[in-house]
Image 1 (cartoon, helix red, strand yellow):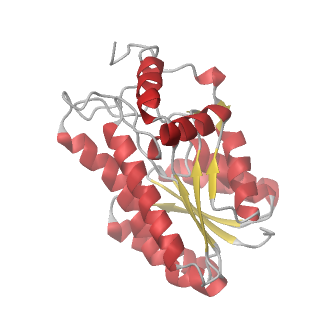
Image 2 (cartoon, rainbow, N blue to C red; image 1 turned 90 degrees about the horizontal axis):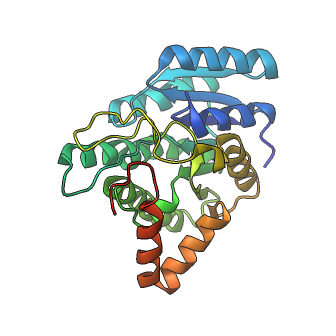
Length: 271
């Protein structure tokens, strides 16, 4: 796919993978509709991308957990650009707490953002993407293939996203619409800093060594190259691929390896 003059919607575009995807798409000549809750930050990003790359970019304040915000996002995109080629469902929220100790509102919050946000945006963008035979992307996680301790809500939301995208891909098999699930491994971003604690408050610090992780810029390049090649699924990092395969072939061993891995994070929840 040549992205020049394509219209790309990206949720969660104010930081991390979403912001990096916006930069990479802009480099390739795409016009952008960027959505997030932080409107001032989005406006700064869109102005910068327009100036540096000569593309057109629209900032839309949206909370993807609200259906009406997602519907308005798609409406604003069409009013400005009159078409949609790619819907990148990237907005996401994480958590770090043992299920036995957390408030159930934390799980509901994660499902509302990670799963329902994807459903809402896809629902309203799909009629236009059918016209352009474009793409729908879900930025999922290895946690969507393998449940992770201390991340019950995050894993559940990503498993739900993966199932939704797989079913949708099958429904759209003969329509020309491309559906891709991108599953980064651990990525250096602010997702662990903003992760919810057991009471729903933000942790405010990372629990892992960010410097050893794949950068959000690398993840964005992988996603956009995969999109250009119209790939079905992207599982990134050797650790991520190994985790998926061990979990399929030797699930009991995967339990032990994952448990041991998470005993080594900062202020480990399991010991």
